[in-house]
Amino acid sequence: MVSESETEGGILRFLATIDIRIVYFLLFVVVVGPLLYPIGMPISVSPDTVEFHDVIAEMGPDDIVLLHLGTEFSGWNELSAGSTASMRMLIEQGAKVAIISAHPEAISISPLLYNSLSDVMDANDYKYMEDTIDLGYMHPNEAAVASTASDFHGTVRTDYLGASIEGTFLDDINTAEDWSLIIDIQTGVQSAAMLNHYRVSYGAPIAKHCIGVSVPGAKADLDAELLVGVLPSLRGGAELETLIGAKGPGVAAMDAFSIAHYMLLIFVVLGNIGYFGYQRSASRRTTVGR
Amino acid sequence: MSMFFKRKDIQLTIVVLTFLVVFIPYFFNIPALDAFSKKLITIASLVNGFTLALAIHSQFRRASNQWRRKSRGYYWGAYMLICLIMMILFGIIGQESAPWHWVMFAVINPLSSVNYCILAFYLSGSAARAFRARSIQAFMLLAAGSIVLLYQAPLTGAVFPVIDPIALYLTNTFAVSVSRTIYLGLATASIVLGVRMLTGREVSFLGFAREE
Image (cartoon, rainbow over all chains, first blue to last red; front, side):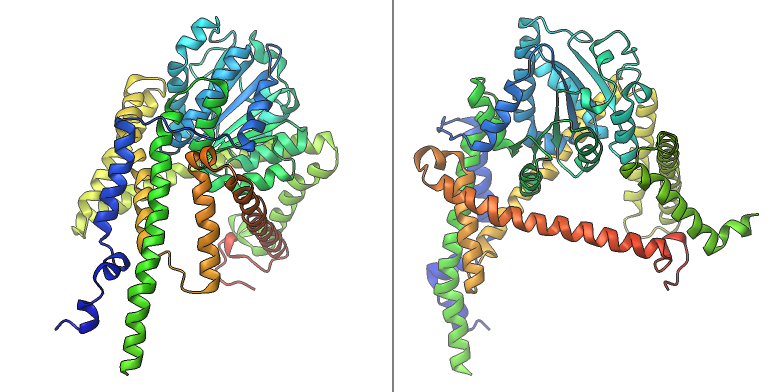
């Protein structure tokens, strides 16, 4: 038997107890729609992104940068835009880049990164082994990170294909302090070992590009000067693309990103209107009825 | 001999010595100790790596037991073993080889991405049905969250830049301070646990069930 309070309420009741399938469907529409038919909404650039950009902008042909890929494929969707834009900057500035994969899946992500920038590499005469090297997987635990920090060539001798790194630009790297910059691309907490052994022990500058949930933690590290820059999530990636004038997947995703955020807010507001208009008054009626 | 190493006091002594060997080089420059410490860490890391073999063995035993008993979801155990064997084989062939990359790009990439994007649906469901201003504190949380959410949408800053300093204040003060609290709590708890382990008050990690 349906009670009176369950039958009344109309629109307020609908808002308070909205069918989850409607929410899912609307989210699907607002994400897929702008991806298929981009609107090209303007985006603002946050101070964090400007700071991160400025750190990379200081790199030149004499600098050797370590790109530390601590991401799996799922996180790569959020970090690919920022990583690609950072790598593009380094290539265009002629900085040397070594890539280390700190996640088993990242071994297959570095080829994606190279492929997406092959035209930029060709245009800048940027060559594998001469200007960049993929060192493959390195377990991101304390032992491995500490070893590469104190004696790089004692730990790493070949690239991921097994070719010797002797005679390459990595000859100039002996300890962690020889890196001009470390760009730590992270979905997890693997960077703790990097901070302990590269930053604290040798003072190597580390800039971090992380997923949204890791940003408050990274900001705390930034305040403590353990990091020199933080690029926050996909939005940071889109902002970096905008700053360097190379719009890519990050900017393309920002229409959906903005609309989905507004949709969430609208649902929060409508849900609360329903809550105060229907659920709270219903509970009062029940209390009075008793 | 094995009985000797099973003694709790001997194991604790080894733990304390190992701790000192790794800990002291952080603060004092003793090259010989530092070199020994690094060797020890590398050995520990390699031993740790071999525990993977133990994990694979356990999974095989578990799945075969499930299969024998035909317990609920036994076929998923078999499916997992097939995937496990496939990944081991492809990994042995080479992580730069085509089969490995095929698994990564054609299977793991889409599955992993779907797994991640499902979070967005959970979040939207929560926004619609759970985020309620049931109290003043909840209202304040919702208000702050809404401002940050508005700021996170890149369009907002472009058309309504006044929100930027407010949202940055909220994230750079409240969010970061909470983050620091968690960090400090973790660090303090780690130190306390370490001291308890070194003083023999926490011995379950050595395989002694009863804690003193």
